[in-house]
Length: 112
Ligand code: FES
Image (cartoon, rainbow, N blue to C red):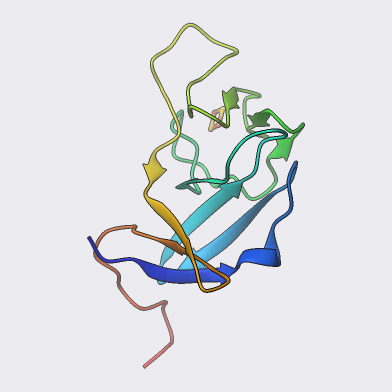
């Protein structure tokens, strides 16, 4: 496992979500109300669309493309009878930073 620093721990508050970048990979951080912070791949498992404009009600992440909803605690789809689920990434909080393991990283395009 190779954890990389994603953002400061204060970048997200309980009941919020946010998209962050780890190299070329987009990471969705969600902190469910009354739960623990989770990290998922920042793309919808339905049609691999970006979750950039997704909404979050404190429990369910709703994809803007076809309105599928995902339980942020488990990643499972809760609006359709499908097995599709958000892809989880391991997450740690250390020294005031949120670290995730997204697998091998490539640098973002344009950086050298
Ligand atoms: S791409 Fe997200 S619901 Fe279809």
